[in-house]
Structure formats: structure tokens, C-alpha cells
Image 1 (cartoon, one colour):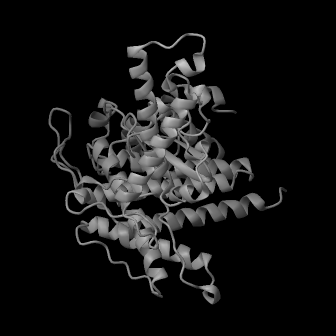
Image 2: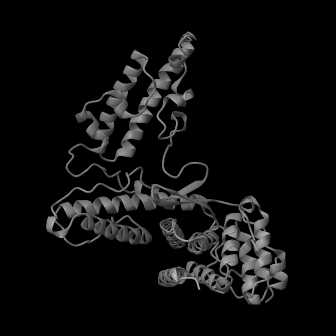
Image 3: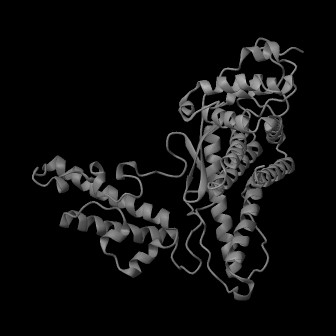
Length: 340
Length: 106
């Protein structure tokens, strides 16, 4: 049968309609992207080698991205190196029109069409889920190791889907290897291993079936809710001092003279907790100034204090987003996905 | 002959250049058709990388083409074993390349 735009052939093997989404394909495509990331890492390792070698590596990595991008209907359009890890930014790109000559002149081609998965949002969700699963697996491996286990026996939660369980098992073993590599057998004493990434809000599918699992280190006695309560107290204290003393806006906990004991709360699950602190602090400080401005505009002679913090990012340390840009969660940000 | 220069990286015509280069290559008609089809997904970055590769490794264009087809097939069929085989083949090719590059020039 001659394939043409007017007379399309039936879906080829693996081809999917717009409404049909194959989670397994998403998982596999994401793994392919990670392979590309590994390849890019290796390209980086060869950054001091010959030009020819770099070209060869780069081409392989590009083909990897190209294949994964084509197969997932997204364009893996850019990569960069950040803190020793390759990062791939995947962004949905409107599909280019098919070259019409293909149908006329090239109809004998036997290469099957790649999977067409309309899924930027789905992929983003998948990446979020994957990161959460990775965190959970790393956490569980650390707990098992500390409890004296000597074999990696992953026990994925029952509410995981089959692909999620597969990811969990792989990540669990990887985390286990990382733990045992870091701690030589002769010195292997129970150690607490924190999740490699902070556990943020779990994916919907998980959240709907189970309460958010505490992400504290096993030795901590507080629930995550209690921790968040304490963080809120600290943030309120910092915001009050900022307002009362006319200090510069600074949403970092360490900028507010907390005691070492108080600061310990930020050593576990650091990013999420610091973000929580920053969010509360930001809301309170900006809320105060906005209210104050409405009630009684501040005199212009003190621009540092008079200006709402969100409008003077120059007073804020370089790291992290500006207050007004505080991220609301993983995976957000204009349709971009970052695989770490 | 220098096929591309850095200014071309921003040039959307890179894809067209790649298409022309592939058409003029020693690839089989089927492979050329495959690339014609796949170029619908190409980006200037990808085109630049491939053009540079083709310039530097004209004898390995067929190999790259085969690798890409195998990857798409593995993705299509979700065949993890096939994917791992491809990665192993790439490793071997990279090692071979490194050995070749380390040979003293005659």
C-alpha cells in the first residue's frame, strides 16, 4: 500500500494515537535521555582530549538525544554541564511538517515510525515521579543499611505501578552500591544515609494513595509536620527582626543569627526546608511592606527599606532564584524539564 | 574544506545543509530516505554536530546511521537489552576511536 498524506497507512508497530499514552514508553524514553546524559558526561570527561575524539563523543550524544527526542515527540534541544553532571533540557517543540517528498519518493522505506507520545506534561510528571521514587529508594536503602541489612533487597511500596517498581529497584541497588562503596566493608558500621535529593511533594498517583512520608533522618523524632512548624517559627522570627530592625531582605536561614542548634533543622532535607523557610519569610516580609505601603507610604529617603524586597534582588545573595521567582515545585517553569 | 563554522550554529539552514550532505553521501537510498524522514525532527544543534562528524569521519557515516536506526528501533520496541547492546557497541567504537587517535602520525 502506498502511503501518502491523503491515504495514511494504519499505525505502525509502536505508533500511538494522540489519546493513547504508554507509560512504559515514557519510562523507557526517559531512560534513553539519561543514557544521553551519561554520554554527555563522558564527553565532558574528554574535554581535554583531541578534537576528533570530542567530535565523535558529541555526535554519539547528539544522536542519543535525537533518537530519544524523536521517539518521545519532544525536542531534546539543549544540554549543558552543571556541577559535574550533564543536564538535558527537554522542551516540547511543534513537530515540523513532514517532508511531502517522503511520501512520494521514499515510500519504500521500511523504517518504522517512532513512538508518537503527545506528552510534555506527562513527561514532566514522569520526571517528577521518577525523582521522588529515586529519593524514596535512596532513603530506604540508607535505612536498611543502618538497620544492619547486608544485601540490597528493594521493597517498593505496593502502590507503585510496575514501571515505578522497576525504577525503584534499580535506584535502590544503585543507592546501596553507593553506600557500600563509600564505606569499606571493614569499617561498615551503621550509618545514616540521607536521600540524594530532597523529597518534595510526591506525584499525584502516590499522594492520592498514601500520606506524605516523613523525610527526616531516622534518628529524628519529629514528624515532617512538626519540622515545618518549627521552620515557620524561625521564619516568623527572622521576618519580625527584618521588619523591626530594618534589615536587608535575606531569605537564607543563616543570615538571621540562629543558633547552631536551631540551624540543625536545615541539615536534613536541606533544599526543601530552606525553601519552606524562604517562602514563609518572603510572604511575611513582602506582606508587611505591601500592607504598610497601602496604609502609609514609607518616606523616600530610605530606599533600601522602602522598597519591597521582591523589587530589589540586588540585596539578595546570588544563589537561588529571586524572591518573586521562588519556584513552586519541581518541574515547573515554562514547559521545561531538567533531568538531573 | 571546512564545511561549517561556528557562525552556522545559529543558522536554521544547517538542517538543509545536512540534508544535502546526506544526499551526497555514500549512504544507500533507503538510508537517505530514512534521514530525510528523520530530519523532520532535527535541530540546528543536532545538524551542526552531525555535519562536523561527517566532515571528520566520512567513513563512519553509515555506522552512525545504523546506530540511530537501532536506537529508534529499541525505543520503539522498548527493548532494554537491545538498548544496552547499542551502548556497548558505542563504547567499543569509542575505544577503537581513542586507540586510533593515539597512534603516532606517520
